[in-house]
Length: 452
Image 1 (tube, helix red, strand yellow):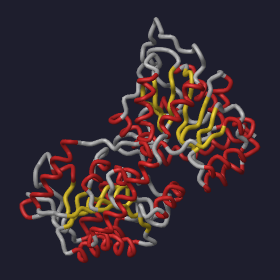
Image 2 (image 1 turned 60 degrees about the horizontal axis):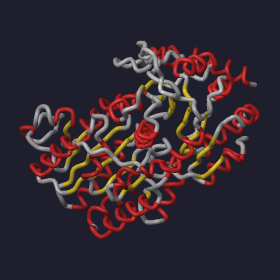
Image 3 (image 1 turned 120 degrees about the horizontal axis):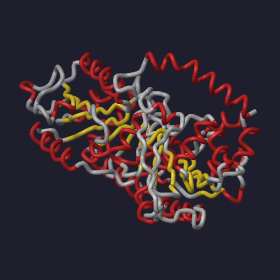
Image 4 (image 1 turned 135 degrees about the horizontal axis):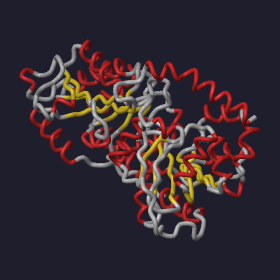
């Protein structure tokens, strides 16, 4: 069955290669660092590395604090981070001081073996629950323990995994530990074949995150808001294709109801969409300005910007065409919307605005964060809108009712604080899983080799 899986994976890669090449953007995100995808990872200085894997931006940022604490607790061990997406790599490179950041190998046995031989990790820690059979088997063959951290199995993933349960069962028996987010996640991984003695509910590391502050960005934006006389800010974060027009209409209705100087900060999830979203704004009739033009050339903005381009557009939009600044923008929000939830994309993490006590709204599609979303809504710590029209109504209610904002935002902050502690439990589990004496300081450090 594993052979059939590998053949299907290989055929799928061959079929998709022409599409990747045709759609490869100027930054070469599909071909750059291609060697890493096949296990050609540069070596790191020292032995007994802790290899942390996080799929994309959200998972990588959830690991940020853990990685810093691993480096403090195990200073003799390199701590390396792998990701799957180009955006995840870009954000991680700027935010996380891992000893090496690279792409996780494709799930071919030869690629996994190659990466494991080059890094010689003492332990592999996989965030959430990305189950790659060939990688797990290669790690077991080389005697490298693997543990899943912050484990989550959505209903959609669970249905897919059940189709290959016969393949997964013997492989999961080799996993050193499963630290799952909820009882439901724990039950699902048990049903897929995990050893009950190695499964525990440890909470969600994302509750422990501390959003980064960007002092220069915040100073600039605060000054621009004051200059333009803007008193209320809506932030629509991580929006996906098909959502921006609905968000803009919701903003029009909410701003009209509030009768105040209101700005919308619109942050598309993926950088390749900055251009298309700019075109949507251009056609919307709203005043707007790009963040990339706001600071370097004061006042220069997109068509429709304020006369002379000297101010943020009151009653308009700031297109956040940057990476790494959304978390700080939430700090200035009156209320927020989490993208990927009006479109059927599963939603995104909304704990960053919760950290700042910002009342947050999301749409009906929060499958990727179902347990947290349900918990927050039940506690009055977030609000859910069934459609773009309803988003406008909820935003309007929040903008016009300071008491409602205080209640929802305060409940969000309190709930977030009550759920912290998963990072400490993760550190304890990692320390227990590390092979004793596997990583004395290396006398001869390996030379880092260039990776194409």
